[in-house]
Image (spheres, each protein chain N blue to C red):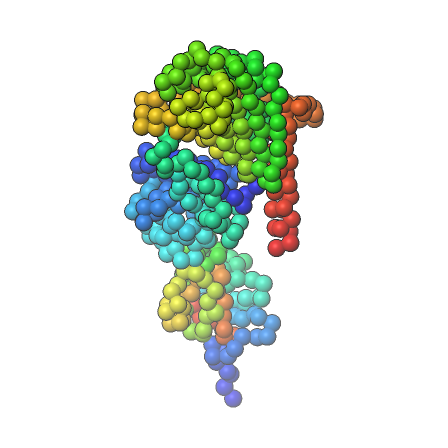
Length: 350
Length: 102
């Protein structure tokens, strides 16, 4: 069960554009969808199911803004109604589902639930996209694990010490207590470490920003969960004693880890990850270098989560421990559960 | 006294009607819960059909007399109004008798 009356990142516009005249098939919240560009050039999403014989439309191709089925040439429109098919009158063909889509921030966002409730004003707002003061680079993983395991992972960074020992991990993360606060539908977990040596990834970022990588720093991690499954993490280091998170830009290297976590099935998800930064936004080589670093780091998480899912699926009755370090994930799941219950009760009342 | 022309008479209150097949000369009774197509099949006639829901047009049949009650999504509204052809998988009759070119 997923919160479905909400916007999820489906794919990047770049990934869709790279397919040329091929559509993109993707399952989101157990809904099989085919994404393609309609006659006006805008991205559309329809059920990945040809009304003729049930073939996946995503195996077809896009012809003049219609999605042509790769089996017998039925042409599907952006509204889920068949436009034409060779030798057939299509007026009576049953319609398939069409999903509301918004193109924003370089991503295609989709509303997998009740289409009558699709509301563009509910799109989340991010200051770091489409903003010349910021640079963004990121990637995508297809992770064979419950999307909530990824939320747990990102809302508890003590794992960095062990999973990412060679890049961003350091014992001070374990040694410094974190603080979790819930504000309505949002969860904020933060940890501030003082007077420490920066780990390798941050030494690289300090050098890139003209700071001495060997200098003592104050380091922060502020993890922000918002529904349905976005986690934005303010991360960075500042020369020690300069104010930490609030230090002036010339004394720090910092960024926002951007995580859009889109459920695919109960045990798999699409993970769009990235990093937005305000230092040297014009430096494309630095963006690539950070992306490559982040790619390596997040690959370490992916291996852990997938094998964690294998264990959990094998022993579904085993209850897991929720420790003090897990409170960010626990609170995030509580919000998901509450919104899920709300969504399901409003469907029953409707 | 002449018998009434059933192709000009409204169908029975029970929803049944008869279909006369011009070529074979046979007359079939079509009950309320039955389609013309299934009545034909029950009587051993092999007629073309596919979707059975008024979409594909495979069972399109010429109407010789009587007035069809169109339920299909295949014919255009204009074609339906002309009453010269019908889809026998789902469309029925407004008159007590239909004569089909079968």
